[in-house]
Image (tube, rainbow, N blue to C red; front, side, top):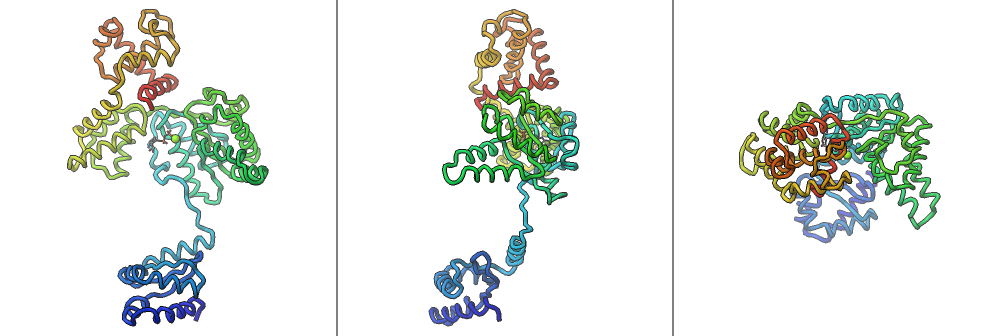
Length: 446
Ligand code: ADP
Ligand code: MG
């Protein structure tokens, strides 16, 4: 007889004296002691009724006697089929082989739709995942919000986790890196040198370091300094570094020259906004993954309307699906999409006026309003004017003829020309796309 059974016998002796024989036979006697793990005794009940009854009526008696005889403060009653799982978990954590995958299971290479806008970045990221510390080190990827940077970093994580679980891979946001570091510096208790060395152990003891949204490092001098040393240490030891940012290194304000030059040592690759086809396939994939019932026309309408970024695309898709279920319909069609979109546009743009757009752009480009409204053809001024026209048409849905007649005092064709020019630049020119996204964010108060 093993130790646990012996002690359990003492518990039974205890309890039989403190309850009726019927209760004892019906409930307590049916429990079997299984194992002790982390100061907890696991008991098996043959069914839920026994488990619940014991917990409800006898848990005080049980815990007292377990505390006396096992010297344990806690116990748990499990069902037979639960025990297999628990045993496995116990075994794995005892052997220390259980390593939790910290990466989002949905963010994989398989779930990432590749199109013209992201094919280069995808190849680079895939190459790094397959062959870390190979030819792309460091890898710096950049692109506007919601274009898939975090998704790609997690894909690397998931891939490495599956294929090379022995590699030590660390993903942090720049914010986390900064906070970790500042905590190390400003932690009043204990030994500062010890804090710093445990920080360094964490960040330098890895095979792959990924830092997401590095742009937040601008204006943080101390953190830049530490990151520079982390970078050098890893790089010299031939470890892979992967960085994401919403803009290229040279546009990160106050980024130290030496960090910028480090980032340029490997590959810098941008992600562009997806074209219609890619947007459509992304939606299709998402609908498949989530088992949404939605017509192709409805998907196409969403893809055609939401051009900003993939996160918004997904947002509108979920909203549309939600609306469909609210309305008690079984399949989502263009009608539901229209309702979802009109609601969004109304809510988002309700306190935006042409005046507000013009004011915002005037501040953004630092060009006086009268110049924007005037007729000067100087390049910067004309560009700001065209952006105004584009955003007024795009965000407020005001007809071009009205914009021409009531706001700029120009004919319909020149307004159309301006709008089309910026539409095209928005697709072809990342800098324009970023400016416009920034201005929209300001207008929407995000
Ligand atoms: P970022 O980090 O660039 O702001 P995320 O990686 O968070 O963007 O992406 C936002 C959302 O869009 C996520 O749900 C992501 O899965 C999805 N997404 C972005 N690009 C793609 C793509 N090419 N294929 C599939 N999903 C994508
Ligand atoms: Mg991100």
